[in-house]
Amino acid sequence: MRIFFVSALALLLCLAAPLRAEPEKSRAAIFDFELIDTSLEGAVKGINQNESKRLILISDILREKLSDSGLYEIADLSHLKAKIDDAGYLHSCNGCEVKLAAEADAQLAITGVVQKVSNLILNINVYMRDVQSGEMIRSASADIRGNTDQSWSHGISWLARNRLLKP
Image (cartoon, rainbow, N blue to C red; front, side, top):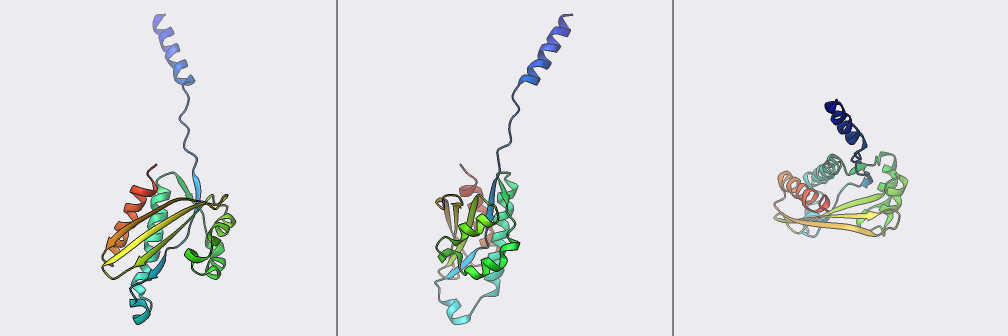
């Protein structure tokens, strides 16, 4: 009889224990990264196709890292492609990314810029704005050495892990 009561009490305690709620995901509009080439190489040689591909690469890596964290739901921006293209450079559009993110029903607008100082020195910058207020809520930057797929991938992965996903 005593075993029955102990078992029943244990069952009641288990049922009464509060369930851990999953954290609510923030819906994020992550726009493709842009390049600011202050090395003057682009002005002399034109657009570097490898760098254009790397911008897409690190944009996709950031989306994947934030999605995999379980903290973010990534908004689909495909229906806004024409508007995004018309906006030009988001890093200098005076907050238009916030309006675009709102059209995607996102809570956060995330943009990024790679500044190329030279083929050896580059930095990756990420900016996170609250869509409702338009305020910058987080920014992060990482200097990278080398203009390669590996250095760009490592830089954005480090930023996601150590700056964007840390409280």
